Every structure is written in C-alpha cells, then in structure tokens.
Image 1 (cartoon, rainbow, N blue to C red):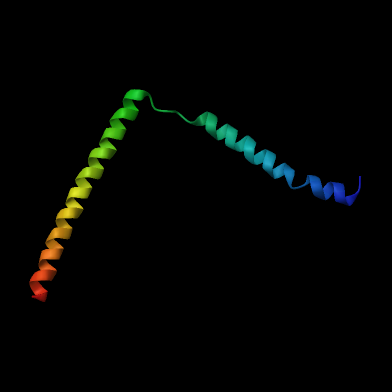
Image 2: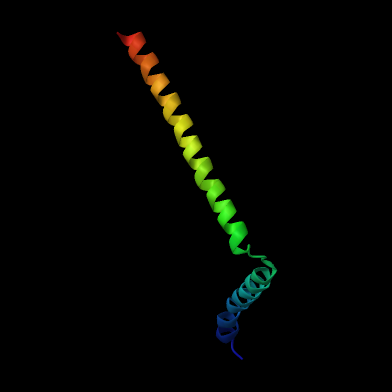
Length: 71
C-alpha cells in the first residue's frame, strides 16, 4: 500500500466515528409527548407576548421622557 492510499484513508476514520457518536447521542434523546409539547409551546407563546407588552410599555415611557426633555 502506497503512502498516497494511506493518506486518502486517514481523513475518513474521524467522520465515521463522528457519525457513530451522533447516532449514539440521538438514541439517548427522550422526546416529549404531545401534551407536554403543547403545554411548553403555550407557555413560550404567552411569555413572548407578555415580554413584548413590557418592552412596548418601556419604549412608550422612554419616548415620552425623551420628548418631554427635548421640548
């Protein structure tokens, strides 16, 4: 076997180990059931809406303050 053949085979070994590792990690995943997924999704949407309202209120107050100071 020539050095060129050995060199061409060396980069492939880490790829095989990588994908074997990925497959092993995917087998460890515990996927949520539909009920849990629905509850968590609703919680994220509600939290996003609440944070949006809070940020909008802070923005309105800041705008009012800047307009008050500049006039």
